[in-house]
Image (cartoon, rainbow, N blue to C red):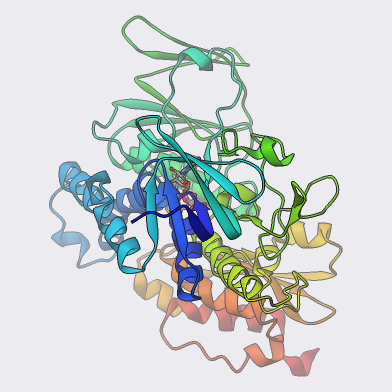
Length: 487
Ligand SMILES: Cc1cc2nc3c(=O)[nH]c(=O)nc-3n(C[C@H](O)[C@H](O)[C@H](O)COP(=O)(O)OP(=O)(O)OC[C@H]3O[C@@H](n4cnc5c(N)ncnc54)[C@H](O)[C@@H]3O)c2cc1C
């Protein structure tokens, strides 16, 4: 039964909205979430789950092919239909019954419709049949409306109806050929998928691949994509796009080169879903990313205050919509922090966003882990060497070839990969770590703990990796750095 007054109103039931609602409900607040599409959001249906499901079957086959003895047992090719069926089970066939049931079991009300702020603590809900009603929040409104694809302004793109990440991850008919525009995570993962599913893939990127990672990450992924037959055009600009009468895509590059393909997809970044959520009713700018403090309280980008319409400390923005670290796990981390903050403030506690506050989501600044499921995988956390230098740290960089580790050599014949740690020389703690190679995503959490806990290098010597695992790369990195007795 839906009532009109709630302690907390959450707009958007993606992974982040669900988590903030759960945390607040567990803390005793009466909470409603408003969702205009599928409960579960992008991650469940058009992002993390389907993309990783599409990547997993070829990765499993490749892993077996890389091991003599297993290799000889492989007598067939990928079964694309079975792979797509498996992907469909991970997206629950784009039905949200399971997540709706979970909301109910967690004691969270759900309203289907579009939510829009209408002044302090008020939210107008517009239902599918264009009916409208107003909800009032006693304590807080949380905007968890996520992000949508940003289509780069390429001449001709407007009339192309290009595929975006939604079409790529929900694909049913694999195109014979596809142009993927972009060089970031989505472009690299999707080029890996479509090349392995049999498409002729061309990647057009203005930069190197994965240019916010250590340079060797993009280089190893580029090498591998080329090995899969991908036509990789980096540091290139598209002058014009058009579609022939039969639907064929025609791209002309600035150097005059021409590329033809059955389909085109754009993976050129994200923009906030804030254009129609009523930001103007509280003096904020529709279409902007929302600026927040470490408790996810929205701050006015000009004044730095959290007072809107004469009322303060009621509007929160969590997950992709604040653009701090647009990843599901990081958004859920923010949601746990914000949910607890909202409960504490509702109980009259004074909660600050200072770094030492137990509620502050400080990891967004210090240690954001990311696993990229290309071939090879890329797993990184904290600062790259370039970012650490830019931030003014005195650093030492240590690299090691993961293939020299016994566990890696056992894992796959001719294992190739690189590990890097970035050490803050003044405190002798890790600022960042990057691993590139088969199955390195599982190495990432150890690195995250080392960075977040600021474990001194001399203590890391006592974290002994078991033999023979790929984790022994940690020991090799420490040996390459030097023993405490040598310092
Ligand atoms: C292809 C791809 C692959 C990815 N892979 C990974 C990965 O492997 N790991 C990872 O950590 N991250 C990954 N991400 C990022 C991840 O998907 C996002 O960080 C995450 O989905 C953000 O969650 P969110 O809840 O903030 O937003 P969303 O998931 O976008 O949820 C927002 C919800 O709000 C609803 N909504 C919007 N406006 C309104 C309104 N006015 N009223 C009511 N409802 C509204 C939307 O319908 C949606 O359900 C990937 C992204 C992409 C595009």
